[in-house]
Length: 348
Image (cartoon, rainbow, N blue to C red; front, side, top):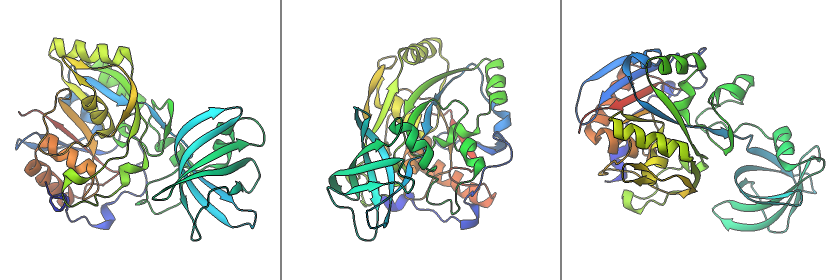
């Protein structure tokens, strides 16, 4: 597939800039895979649409990964913390992306404006990637990051994070800290809605995939085969693998709540389910692809020419996805992280 096949026209005013008043207040487009019927529903109607399904959600938690550190001269450098590499003796090593007009140099000593967090630049890796050694002036590094860091809203949300984002850019089941972006399909699930889903006979289980900045990286290769994905850390607990195997035996559908869950499960597919365990995955799902685990996908509407849209096309069928996106634009759906959602299911 050529990257140009992932293009579509999106009016800028359809990019959601803030969450709706209610977490479960979004619209929901229901799509049958490979050319089936399309319906316009709401997230609140999910319990009517799903019965006896196993919903797999991502319990990663977004960290305040955007930090500002200063040189001895006072010049400020913005960093996005991407991944904790090591931790020992009250110090932590982090892979980060650094942004400054004059560049970051190996050996630099930096500190936050309030001197709560100190950093030593250990290594430059190219593409803006640096390895930082972080040390807190008092207490541990995690606490210092919590105090000085800010929530890394996606680049298409053109405003400063406010108090509402602290809760609404996290899922209600966020537990495992480490993501720099939210698993956005899960943002729609409120605690009352989850209770209604379970009352309707559905079951929830959890995986962890720490979403990295690669989720926003554009496709730079014209042929999708030539695009290299960023690796992301995942964990599939034993109880989740057992729940999926049980659902498969019983003929109950496995619903991936979000593309991060889809990638985690399909990357670890095994006979009759998935393998439990931890590791990293750089799986890139694009047409054609044979899905082995997931039967339905709940997902938001994604950026043009993105790896996430390629995954949606692989699952729904390219023509079905294109038609759905055209309908979403025509019907004025809200797009991207704080936008509306799509449920893709059925078909062969």
